[in-house]
Length: 424
Image (cartoon, rainbow, N blue to C red; front, side, top):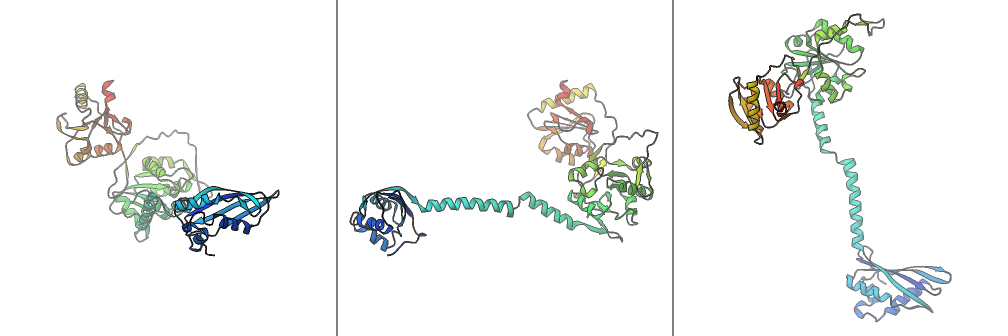
């Protein structure tokens, strides 16, 4: 007797059977073929359909309980859905099996392709989840990994001592001295290409000429060894600024945010020397701080980051000279110009005599400042940002007037005025 492959079946007929007596499996199979014979015509004769492979092997599962037989009949079919439904309905015409009464009911018609489709969808979800979590990296991770590897490759050697250094050590006007190679790599990851390592506690001879030519920032670890290195190097080289890492941390352990914060808070070499006067060596060569009866008052120095030049990020001190006051006439002029710009997204460029040099869109303001000289003040419909502050300071602009500002007045040496100032 031929049988259909489970792989080629499109539908499966599931039926239940209840028999009032005890029968064997061959009795049930015989009743299925015998009681449906000639019922559906020659084209849907079960024996012929099974021989041709359009009906598969009929599976019967039974269980005897209390002298009665219960079970299921499963019929795989490769017929179309209409013919399969007819064959299924014919099963319910079986009323006796052997000498016993029987009752057959169709439970459901299963579309094998739907079951396979659901399996495919579920499995695809699982595979995609595994692929995303384990194999496919995030685009930002790819960018960071590639950038980090490129920065690692960028580290070079300087001088006859072959000191680890960033690629911008020669062309940069400012350099950062650190203790070791790992510190140079940490600064490279943060975008600082002008760092160079001293590889020890003493200053190599190759660095001494650099210290005389460039602005030098000494960046040491936040421990007593950092104090020792600072004190020794300040005695033999021209150091301009000193930065110390967070207490108990090394430079290579700092995060990107901590490195930028530390460099913004650097102090002058003179101030560092005053602080180190209270540090004396102990018997084991380490340094300890000795309490002094005098009170040392540290002058506050605010640092403002400069725009990166040739990929080199630097910081520079900003003097806190008293800001110039504006006259009532200037205040009235600024307010009038600002009110004229409300909703226009435009900007007025003024000279020293409060004359309007021109009007440009706010989006082209930064490009205008780079090409236009003699600008004293800017009035625009927009928001003052740190980038604009840095560009204005670089071009010698004294006043910025806008609708609002992300920068507080005490964070810059420029005069900053917003609409709220004129409405007070």
